[in-house]
Structures are given as structure tokens and as C-alpha cells.
Image (cartoon, rainbow, N blue to C red; front, top):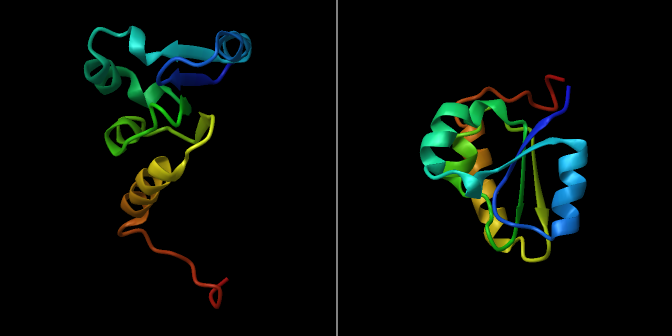
Amino acid sequence: MRHRILQHGRLLPALEARLAERYALHPLWSESDPQGFLAAHGGEFEGLVTSARFGADAALTAAMPALKIISSFGVGLAAMAQRLEENLAAYFAGRPLVSAAAA
């Protein structure tokens, strides 16, 4: 079974072709209603591939509950880092954490 990967924004054609060879890649931009598509199918994707230009905002990642990895092509992760920090804080909010002393 090939891992399902959501592609947010266009990448270099050679990179898109290589990803499509290895994964079940779905281009989000091809959807006429991206939010509706995510509401119906967001849970099917384990990975997200994007770039610094398109990023991965909280709404996008929240619509992907099975998300395990985000891969970003290019430079400029500062804006994405803030979004990821917010997403991680929201994910771990209210979850018990194991302290080093208890481990």
C-alpha cells in the first residue's frame, strides 16, 4: 500500500513526478472546493508536501487528523515554524506528558 500524500501548491515538475511515482499523491489545488474535500477526505492522508510559498496553516493540518509528516520544499520555514508550533501546542494541550523522573 502506498502512503497517501496531499500536495498543497505546485512544486517543480520533476519533483512532482518523483513524488507521484513513490506515493499516492493528491493535488489539493485541483479541487474546486478544497475545504469541502478536506472535510470529506482529510483523514485519509498521512503526509503533506508543500513549500514555503504555500505553507501549512492550522486549518489545513487540523483537517488532516492522520497527518504524520509535513515535507516542505525550498527555503523560508520561519512562517511555517510559527504555524507548526501553534499546531503542536494545540495537539498536546490537555495531554498528560511523562516527566523524565517518571520514566
